[in-house]
Length: 374
Ligand SMILES: [Zn+2]
Image (cartoon, rainbow, N blue to C red; front, side, top):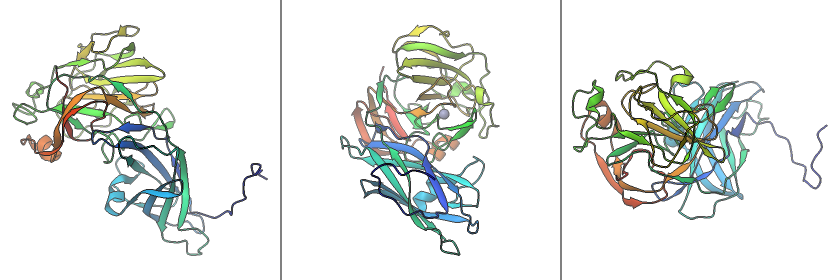
């Protein structure tokens, strides 16, 4: 028999067809839209037993202190929810015994006092045929971090950097990479950015797309965003060809040539896809902010030259939790309106207007274009 904590009111037990958990308690970060973002993942399992049946999630309602903060439903839920296994297509229906993830992005106005806890309510269909399971029930309470994300320096120089696969509210390859690594689920790439630079004319390349040198940032210096000690280096993997679809990588090779820097306080920075032989630092070496680490390339799991940048809570790029960060400064140049057109066909970038202008202490969001200056 389980003891009830002293003073706690007894609650009624109910069968629920699903169970849900938050993978990692969210920590706030001020985004390039000026809002506070809480990015996290709900992991949902279909535990229906009376009898086992498929369950469709209709709504995920986020609450703080009993009040509704945000509701994810309809088309948006269809975009942000998918079964585990990266090859499967998105669906909000979970088969008996199946599991799914929902990529959450709860936002508040700049400077808002954040709740210390969030709860969720799941609304599902259908009811169990026997009606002994609830179709609306609370699930997945989580604490909320109260400290703003750390500020780091830009890892690159110059204008026209597109924040590809950036945080927070879209189902990008980074956000949906909840991977089983070393026997546990991790979202190491939760806040990762693939920086791809456009040409001064706003195109992907200034020459044939299958030649690495046609990409304006190929060979650019990658700079340390923080001070720290180098704890991981790979420098011998080849630059890959430009290929739209990549074979699944060996986990250890996904980042290609890379540098991992221990920043302190249990935080690590990861710089990936560098040109073979270009890494200038060695394990054990201390680096300063702005120190060149290597040259931007196309090694590892990369289908066009770019810098993959992330912070994480351990030295393993995939077997750690991605943690948020903000850049000390950048100039917001707009937001890319049609990335597939730009990336797939090298069409001139179509930018929507906002946000524009100098920014301090923000994480630029998915498809924002930023100028880091010199
Ligand atoms: Zn990446």
